[in-house]
Amino acid sequence: MRLKVPFTICAPGIDETPLPEELPRATALRLAETKARAVAAIHPEHVVIGSDQVAVLGQQAIGKPGHRQAALDQLTAMAGHLVTFHTAVSLLDARTGACQIDEVPTRVWFRRYSRAQAARYLEKEPAYDCAGSAKIEALGITLVERVESTDPTALVGLPLIALTTMLRNAGIEVP
Image (cartoon, rainbow, N blue to C red; front, side, top):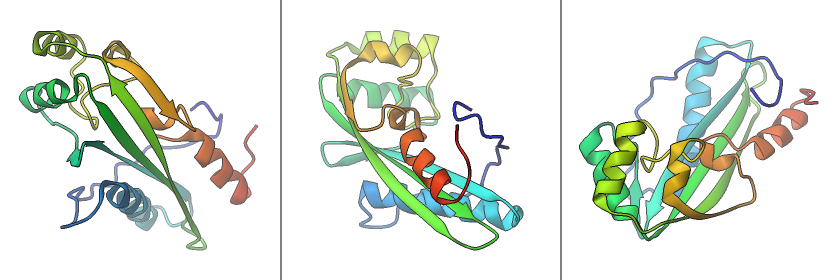
């Protein structure tokens, strides 16, 4: 990890379905905390990080596509448009129950590209497991025209500036 803090990855295995009438930002916040609490139940002596991201195109939430056709449909819909990514992070001290949570929005303007270009991207990088179907940290950057955020790591899925503040608040030294 970039922060040089030792960690272990543990999948929380929770239902990530948005609640009825739940706004995308609220979904990301709820799921980040829910993931942390699910892992804390298994590891009650640890400090646990939970994170989640929900993308929004217009008024429509965009989740993880799961398969090629859904990813291609998402990428085609996003071409030439602004998409807002709501990335939430929580830090839960399972020993005390203290929980910090924050959300970092990132605005991404996608280039105008064809469905065939989106298909070629997915052939090289099958991004079926991330909101919006494009991995900005890899080849997905070619689909993007501009990014606006207070934390450039938020778009990758874990806002490290916010997390650094949380770790320090929890008494964990970060170089």
